[in-house]
Image (cartoon, rainbow, N blue to C red):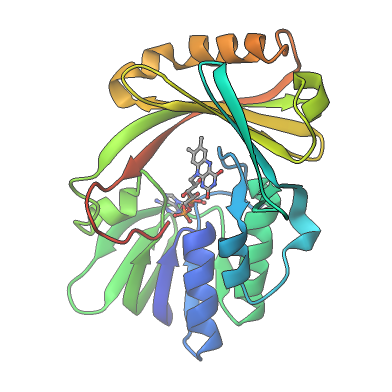
Length: 257
Ligand SMILES: Cc1cc2nc3c(=O)[nH]c(=O)nc-3n(C[C@H](O)[C@H](O)[C@H](O)COP(=O)(O)OP(=O)(O)OC[C@H]3O[C@@H](n4cnc5c(N)ncnc54)[C@H](O)[C@@H]3O)c2cc1C
């Protein structure tokens, strides 16, 4: 059985960043992820400049586009554009971005095990994880296993989270195909009772999606269809379409991941 100072479950941005910091400070770290990497992640892929600046390495190699304009609207009406002097966010595809973060964790010394689903925890004394045909133990367990956080739940964490629902499509095209200027991102508000749709440009794709209260999840696909139609993208080639929960806390807590 492998013995470590820390086991990080989940190799997304939260897990790989934690693993990199721990390994860089001399800890023996194991990162375990159930997916084979690189893996697709439903996400707009917008990285605010403030977040980019927190990273101790450049991310240029995975930046697909940068945005300096945001166009806000309410169901397509009352649109206005806010421009900034320079880019305020980078646009990335999460498979490549997350892989870059993970490579830096490995470079710092973290050990990686992918394709490994953590199925059981033993939290008596040192932490022990069990996956199919694999066990490891450590002083510390970090549950960075995403919004559903099955391992966090096994550890009794992640209760009392509010949930909303998201639907995202990756459409082949450039902003001009949707009559949108270059370097521009769209946010469309005004959904009932609340929610928003977005368009984030990538090098060859447009990430388009909607977030609504969980109870309204049944409407998401039709509303995204309507949004695509309004953008002039009806019948556009959809590469990937995915639904996902977004879990969040209400109140003053700090959330990582
Ligand atoms: C539709 C949508 C759009 C979004 N757009 C944006 C955006 O534009 N900008 C932004 O900053 N954020 C956005 N987000 C939020 C962002 O995706 C998340 O905040 C971010 O992915 C969280 O990172 P994480 O490392 O916590 O988890 P994740 O990236 O979800 O990684 C968790 C990892 O844990 C692994 N895992 C899960 N269970 C197990 C298990 N039992 N054993 C082993 N491994 C396991 C998974 O394989 C996964 O790789 C969006 C989210 C959604 C759903």
